[in-house]
Amino acid sequence: MDSLTDIERAILDLPALPVHVHHAELDWVTRGPVAPVGGVRDSLRDRRIGTFTLDGPPVLTFDRSHDLFDDGAVLLVDLAGHTPGSVGLLANTDAGWVLLAGDAAWHGLQVQQIRQKRSYPGAFADEDRDACFRALHRLHAVKDRVRIVPTHDHQASSGLAT
Image (tube, rainbow, N blue to C red; front, top):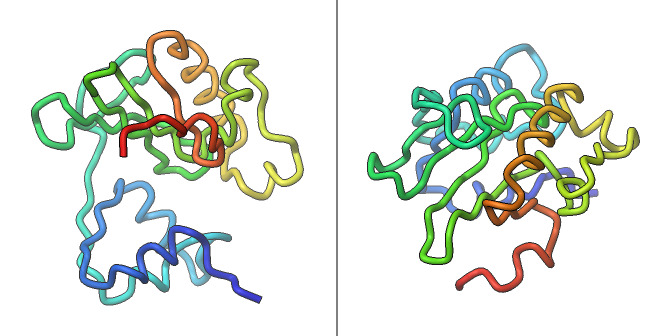
């Protein structure tokens, strides 16, 4: 049985690529004798790792941000809950703001209806269910101003420029 997560596979497929990760995420993945379920500890071994903090001002409904290129084009925003260092990638595109929401929501219906992931598998997948639900509320509050793309919602990602 293949126990690698999608992120682990992606990291292992690009061995020379450095990894940039929120410091809270790196702390969570590497602390303790055993990595969290779905953690990427093994795929980070011998890898160049850069960390960042959410050191920028509030953006929309998100209390903390980080301007990735210092030009306002791509902002990382706090979506902690699924994991302690979960971030969304907020891109300022010609068509308006697009937010890649990661696993803060698995499907757009969760954002539209403020529906938390079902307890199974959500209780196993989310590190902090309450924080994840707060992140979902923040997503819901901007749904009419930002195109939100949850990781597992293929319809939400259709039509994005390739």
